[in-house]
Length: 623
Image 1: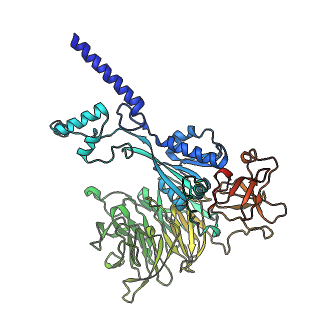
Image 2 (image 1 turned 135 degrees about the vertical axis):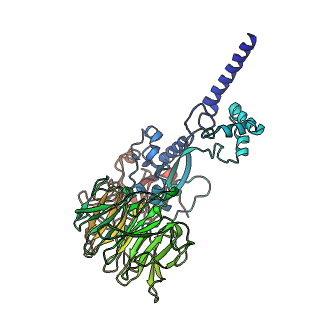
Image 3 (image 1 turned 90 degrees about the horizontal axis):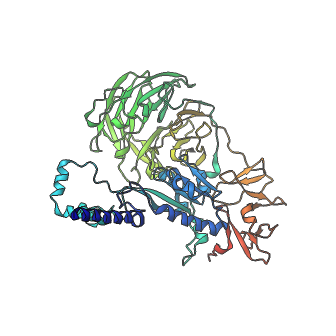
């Protein structure tokens, strides 16, 4: 009886000890098995920084802050008193640059980075943690082997009794069992605008003003509405799921690689459904995938004779069909660049005037040339950054002179190659860099085409836009932004130009095929009598209905001065309440807009890049 009492007393002590550990020691890390998912300290650390920055810059909680995706929890509650907070689920646009503070989850991280680019500092925090999961997928054999290992038994005892993972991590050679590097975990990422940081820095030497990367295409970006569109998301005829490339046939018919429906769809020049072919099959794990079946086809091209070629991407092969979809032949296997018939994720395909088929072997960083039925002719390229080398090549296009254009995605450039005298090979000619293709997400795979005038059109999927260049790389214009409708793009991937010069774009996310007629001129110039828009790294737009200048979110940030000669920053109510009544912005000798106290001392200073008034307590003068 006394032994039973002692046993239960010991268990009571252990239970109380475990409860204390769970509630007061390991309450915010993954060491504790009593709670499956823990909220880590990261979200609170981020909140503290946001509060500090907001207090310094707005005198309260008026800072603009965006939180993305899974960052909804816990910030829907933490930011309940912040009037300028915004939650963005997953539809990111360049308007994100309007926020001096951005908090992203893991899922949308690449898109966030692509939009914010080098203009923000990035900090990583752990948001949620789960207990170590080595107990999963154990077998009787592995358990028995562990029970015979005294060192492992002691390591498990350390974890059970003291939540000490040191010995276990050493045995298993794991670096992910410390609080700082714990896995499994979910993370959040804090982005702070560099220009904001330099203006409020108070820790030692003031950092030099950051070099802000400006979109070189911003001045020539516009908005076009398609003159024709068709499609929707779905699996029925005329619907698409993740449509990628598209091509125009000799008769004007449109062929679409309906990738995630694993089929090809054919339409008339006016978007009327004609036919479809294909079904899913995979060669992976020894599977049988006969001709006419696909595993996520990305690229498609139509030869001068009407033959249709498809890059059957994840069956690692090229398939040839007649114009009405009858299977002709196929070639290719999964493999490295050691063989001219092996591919790793081929995506781009084009047919030249001689009927030769050119393919981007994306994963192997090369371009291969075949005859009309898959006979190998030549190849060029390898992984690298030098001329003629590639890093994730995708789209291909050929102009009227026979020049080949390659979208060298991760090198962020377009390379141009010319046919050589042997009529089967290509040599490097020129290249130009593009300020696009920032992210390396699975869908950020751009396509390219060339019109009759030699103008080069590319898709910029993660930035939701189309860019147009001349054939030597001079930027002509661009259009697009995020939209779930036809007034923008959800994920523009494929692009093709028809014989009339109309540009067709496949929107993989929204399920649309959109046709654009190119106007002779673009843009609407600012009224000539008005002064030029103020300099800023944020996008500014003159609002003709209000006569004011709006920021990226549509809120007025500048008003016209009474004499009509300059733009004056708008003073929001929150700032006006902290300065003497009637105070108006004045220009300093250095050309900076300021709000002054009644004694002439500085109260707030305007920061044109972030479009915010900064408190004098945090204004730093950099010599």
